[in-house]
Image (cartoon, rainbow, N blue to C red; front, side, top):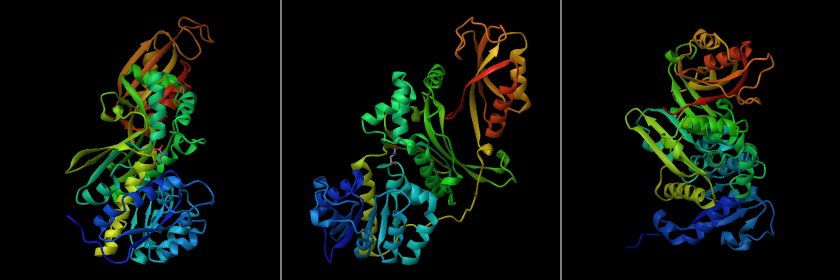
Length: 454
Ligand code: HSE
């Protein structure tokens, strides 16, 4: 069977020739005949913009003369611009220039979309072209297209997932080997899972940008990176991971996006969007606990569809290029057959909520004096903040620098109290921990972590 391929080739410009860009270029070249048959027109690489010429880029499988340092000129002579440079500038200027010149854009740039997505959408609209960005969240996993298209007739209520492979690798190593954070990061760097400067991943910036994109699409509302509550994993210690293991839990960096009803504690009674990224304990029996190494997985809960799970490689050259090329084919088909991809959908206009309005559970480990009435005082603090305790356990051994039976500074033996709460507003939980830390009988708050995934 042969497909009809006719007309002038569609001109594709690639901005960036790093791990992803070189995979995109190679796949466009190696799969040229199949792609032409799927689109109905050949896709021709007209240039690849790089910062410096002269490097060996033979892996991209394209002729040397196609490399250029003049990205501004390149975008003016393309039908489709693939932006895989990353960062805010010059990516934003180049994308806007591509739209002005009538090109559709396929980008993997989560930081730019989370910071200034509405500007990009508006420019694409004004030019009557497509803006696609499947590769910006969770690499190869088809996730944005299901949210934008397949679930466009349903009501998404929650998105919960692991969207950063680097931190998942680090936390997985801490769990499986008992390594501390720094050692696990060094291991991830040695294997190429973490950058030399891992800040964007370990501080949660990468996951927060992805959460902003997911929340915007899921809830038809503009959510930017600044609206996402963010905690990274740099404070997660080997002791926290061991404590999770004791509870038959693992620690994962989670991105959580959900609609919170007014009744759930948000100010003013109207529903809002809670988007947040933090390390949390989840039970080992939860499907996300089985997501190992650098893989990503995302749960989407929708009113009619129920719970859907998306799983796969969230980074890497070829997996990310797969998502990019899917978008290239989609927009190329529009060039050939007419039509446009989905526009921005922000009509619901829900308010972004503060972290305090989110409902979660806490694991709290306290080093306390071991004498009558201590447990009652601790329990009273939870009650005063309207936080219900689910589990409490006391150990004689202490971990905060004191061995079991050692005397504390007041000459008392200490004890270790482990408390797990029922769900409560984060503001109440964090106020409870602050109040506990002030009690005389609390000698130290040794670990606090949110618990998710019931
Ligand atoms: N640095 C990201 C991760 C991949 O570790 O998942 C690109 O988004």
